[in-house]
Image 1 (spheres, rainbow, N blue to C red):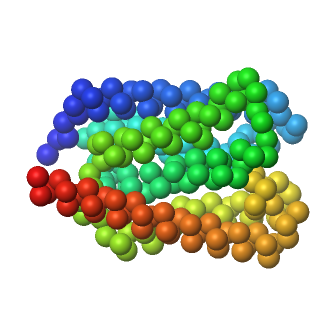
Image 2: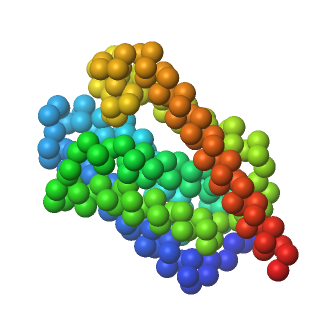
Image 3: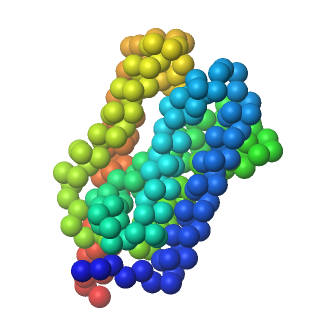
Length: 215
């Protein structure tokens, strides 16, 4: 059965895709413009940030749902479990930045614009999309476990590459300063946070699904 996109949903997807791709490309331009390493190393570092990878995931999701909603990719991104997972991932982007990272640097100009888009505007946009348009039925508490795969793979990549290159994208995973033991403890704390946030979103989805089925 083909998915039908309402005008409101289509408009939201256009705005979401445009804003997200703009922010990603702006950040890529800025990191290359202000690079302290070679262009290839700078690009690798660009793709080492959880913020960038997650915003790219959001951009692909918005774009596929807009352009090819009935394709295999469109059906994949339309699933309640997938949309819920992406919502959690981008929520964590905004949460960590505003609780921790905002306090340690003050960007200006275009860098501030890119930061606010990537860490505030886009997380809010996707959470709003999830709230308004994402299916909420069919989610189970056990869904929270496979959703941890993405942050786990990311953590392994960051720690492995950091051990080889000495570059860590975030201060709370910087083994050069904190030591590996402290970084591993921080990582465990983040996984617990991911899991609890997942349970929170599942509970919200269940409550919304129950409310919708009773009306």
